Length: 136
Image (cartoon, rainbow, N blue to C red; front, side, top):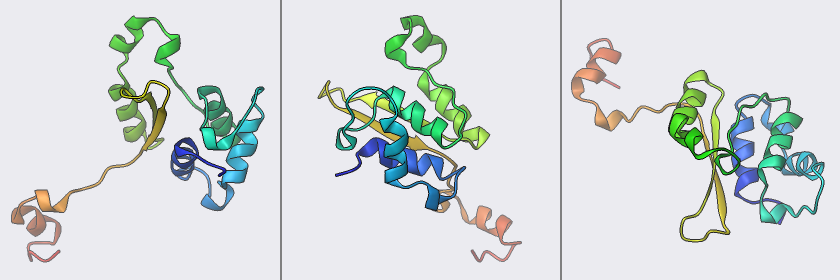
């Protein structure tokens, strides 16, 4: 296997800025393998390797690794605010975290864009967006 959740998350996030045909798992793994140390793609990506992949695709990044920061940083800059700013800016965001039930397992989730849950809106909303006809 040549990928794990981190490669999937990176491919999704990078596709906002890079043509999808360029974002192959081989290319992701090429950038990740440039970081010194043993690398097995099926074991996922370290923070350093994720940074290398994003930079490899020419994407500027700002990140915080709470495990490397003073505990006050998490209170001052909670991850929700960082993700929200990434979504609102159109750049997207990537959240990496350790599973609470399995301390040795990590996971990554990309965040980007907004959706509209049409079922949550009333008929008045549909009338507004359809020019008063009520048709969707």
